[in-house]
Amino acid sequence: QVQLVESGGGLVQPGGSLTLSCVASGLTLDNYAIGWFRQVPGKELEGVSCSVSRDVTSASVKGRFTTSADTAKNTVYLQMSNLKPEDTAVYSCAAVIVEMATVAGCNRYGMNFWGKGTLVTVSS
Image 1: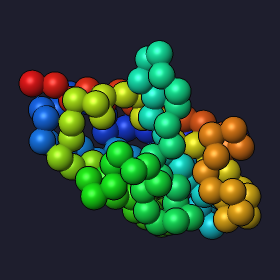
Image 2 (image 1 turned 120 degrees about the vertical axis):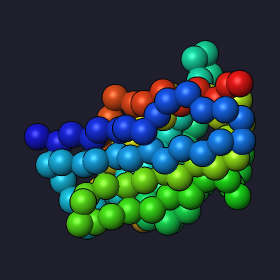
Image 3 (image 1 turned 180 degrees about the horizontal axis):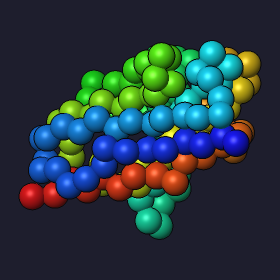
């Protein structure tokens, strides 16, 4: 059974930093790409990063967010710095077969498995 479990969310002041973790079980990072997505209530789901590119994919977070993976721990991280109130959202990770991600990236419509998400609130 595949599970993706996010952690690391919380309340942080503007300008602060957080690192989110996505621990995968039932699959390996050799065979699956992991994408980070975020959603603000009432707005569309936004793709933030995709592990195949080893970089963030959202222009709104470039230069502030980075992504990395620890294959030994089957974990993908999203390091967030210089956080802004507009970064407040539920952050979720999702997995897709790596061959699909190589062709189409981490497309929100094509992901095979999803975690439940972790809330990040940026507020003073």
